[in-house]
Image 1 (cartoon, rainbow, N blue to C red):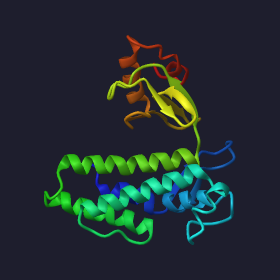
Image 2 (image 1 turned 180 degrees about the vertical axis):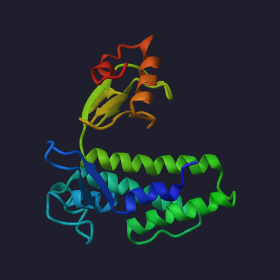
Image 3 (image 1 turned 30 degrees about the vertical axis):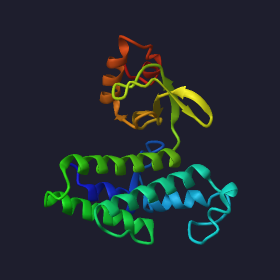
Image 4 (image 1 turned 90 degrees about the vertical axis):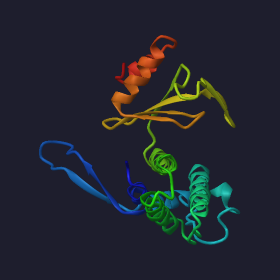
Length: 216
């Protein structure tokens, strides 16, 4: 069982990225980063030079990164809701609220005051927040997958931009593969899980897009 506090720390603590050398004359590079939730905050104000501090954030909505703003709002509201269900009050700063979600959630699970199912779902939600932040920080190549989601059965969703396939595959050159269902939120991370998804879709859908990503 993944500790909820570990999932939250992936958002609230500094982290390092190891980059391979460009050529044989260079060594691996270690790049230090601030916490992912603060990187998301920086993205919100990237178009206007503002941070998330101060009361003018909503008023400047047209000048900021709306995708980052919407994700911040979603994480903020869902983290507060989780703490309220635990009987705890959220902190003023989102980063502190997230830390408390991890600590309190694991403590409640350890005393069986939170069920394993509820704990697993909350951990999965926090891990999805991390994935959503990373999608904004490092946008991948996207490919729509024709077929129905194995979980919810949906094949198409409707967004403000119009109708689209529910299953979307993501590819980062030299990195990992993933696919999301935009109807129910289920995620397939890594080649093995995407191969399983492709196998499921094989009899009923054309999954040429998965094969184009090296999965099949």
